[in-house]
Length: 187
Image (cartoon, rainbow, N blue to C red; front, side, top):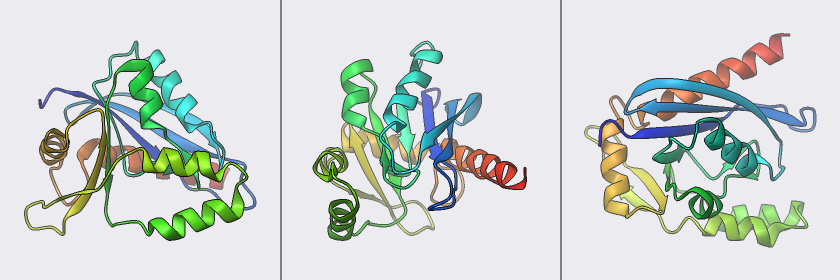
């Protein structure tokens, strides 16, 4: 279990209305040990995050056991589609959220801003329900999972979380995504 190859995905920051793309960090870890980092750009509010994720899986010779992210949307409402990844590669996805999203507000925003809002809602709702996970000394996190049973997903999250509430692969991917975003902003 500790040696599972996790592909952590984290979107970087962007300026709404100015930036058309945002960086996305794809960090492959073996357990908590970083093994390979791939940076790609995804369209802000686009629908290419899943394509970039699947390209990354191919570049990694499909040696990924689990995809992990802190949410389905990255780079605004660009969505990671865990069902497509599962169907194509047989790789499950785990999403670790710090708080419960307001699903009605998300749905309303999608409906207001996107012609393809139904497709986007289907992707978000396709991740199943939220499962609360208490971590020692911390507020609970919410875990969504596709292709893996909730109990197993929660075991994976617990084993990969060393400090705080964020699993180590996601924590490192977040640091990288932010650093890449800052480097772009400074150039």
